[in-house]
Length: 203
Image (tube, rainbow, N blue to C red; front, top):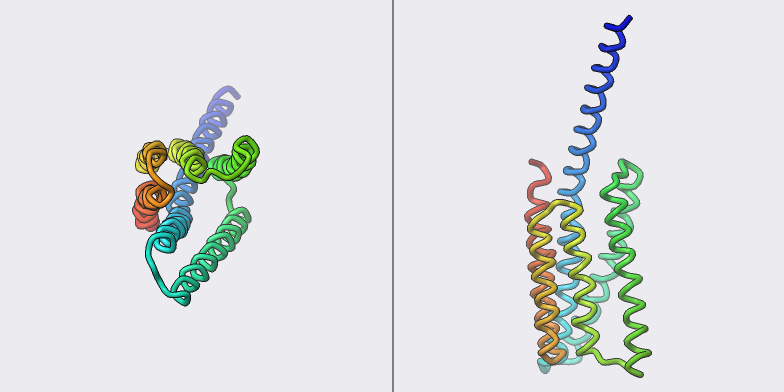
């Protein structure tokens, strides 16, 4: 009777380890596929800030200006729509603790950015974009570092740290150069890690 109990305990322990191993493999595979979101949002935000700089600093025709604006709007709508579709599609498969944690991080970020905008607007009795921009970048840098920590992805953590350093650097520049700084920040923090991560999805 005791031998059967020991065999059952051993089987139960082995089964538990197997389940844990499978969960880790699923999380790692999902992480690599999630690289597509880093790529998409990285390029969308990069385009947003580069086009903002171009529209402010370079003299272009009305048609080209509208082309920049329409493409930026379309890219933003596509990024939102694809993200919602991606999250909905994957939520019907396997929902991991990591995935749920990341949703809380980025939903909280969006709420905090909105509240910060309102607080700054109320406190300064108007809009000071040269102050607002670096502060909002710091919130984004924090979310990137937390995301990298949850995913155990060092390149993303490094990108978040660089994002934060560039946020501080931005505070010394005019809004035009702040746009360039943030465009570079999105390349380092999202585009490069996203492409590297997504390239390993079949490995």
